[in-house]
Length: 116
Image (cartoon, rainbow, N blue to C red; front, top):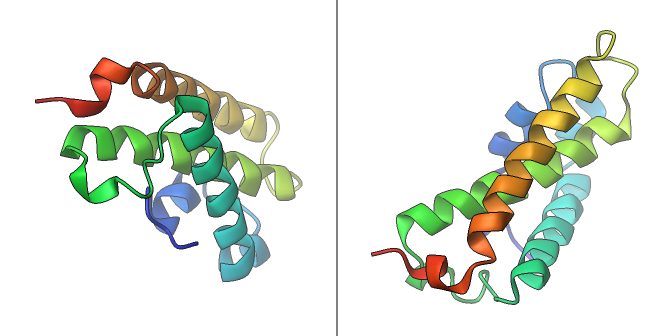
């Protein structure tokens, strides 16, 4: 699978400045996180956004990027929390969880998947 619904830099930025340098440099690990996150979002919304990406509106693509990059960022933080300041990892994961929840709420409503 490829990076369809988001870009690696979006996820790395959301993981914060203290993210483990080994994991953010690992293309294979990040690709696996992306594959998992894209599949999870598609399954949650009962819509194959990856296959239908070219037909989606810019707004839906933005919501998808937000959801997927937030899931990936959480995986990056989980990989190694030792580099973060006290409670920083928790705050980052909470912020990403909230972003993901808000995006998924919108994306899971079928009528919102084709914004005009």
